[in-house]
Image (cartoon, rainbow, N blue to C red; front, side, top):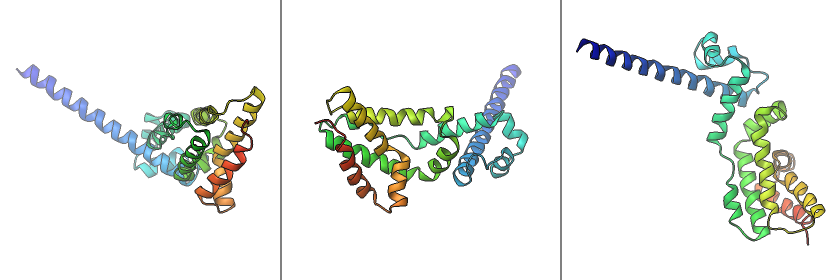
Length: 200
């Protein structure tokens, strides 16, 4: 009987320890996300993150052996909380212009919601491997928006180039922040410019 009690006690202690580790890891990632968004990745040290999380620097390194591991965890959680617009919903719209309008509206809403983080991260880490899924998504988005327009290979290449420009965070930021356009105005402008590239 005593053996069973000991096993149950040990199991409970291990569970509590694992939960504590998970909470600590989450606090570290949350602190890192907040600092990356406010300061940028390069200006944030592991010591800064430890202080913000209320843990020791050794604890941060126990969970994340290097900055790349921590940035990867931050990226995963951030994009989980800020999912990309639904490409399948766009595919459900048969009319090319309406699909484009919906795609641009969703994309600009996404850029606005993630602006604080993406402005910093793209400035510092645009070409790093951790950003590959971000860039892959927007390439795929351009493909989905191009689908309803049949055309030659050359025509489609021009259209996709126009769509890539229209979907870009940098384009949205230039129009919204640099030129003071509302998202609806930016969508209208890019609809006109992109449709000029469309076949037919």
